[in-house]
Length: 165
Image 1 (cartoon, rainbow, N blue to C red):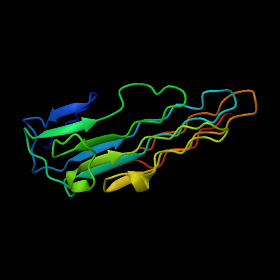
Image 2: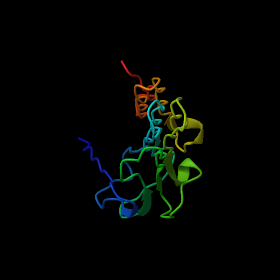
Image 3: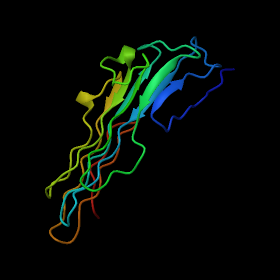
């Protein structure tokens, strides 16, 4: 019987693939970009949601004890701040991968300075064999309030646009 193991990395820097990792079994590495902060004034749009990207054993090679480098958002973005890209470089290099055989990259959402919501992280700019765009931020509502943030994408598909009901 195969055992499923899930590992969450919550800090930036060099990480080690667990020593009990079995390269002969299927694996998937997921990344979700950070959501953006919305506009910094009333009636501004919401921030865009982060994109999703994944790679599997069909895309790249991992071995037990291998060092990899991670970069991810570790804080909530301030108003008017873009979401942070999330990535893992399998070559243990402190730069985002450019091909899926070297890792996975999910783009962060965009902020806005207008009443139109920020764009979600775009799948076309992601690195992975499965990629989905984040949802766009919702539009601001006259002087009554800012738009809702866009939803992050995930393994099931694209993020939804932020709405105020």
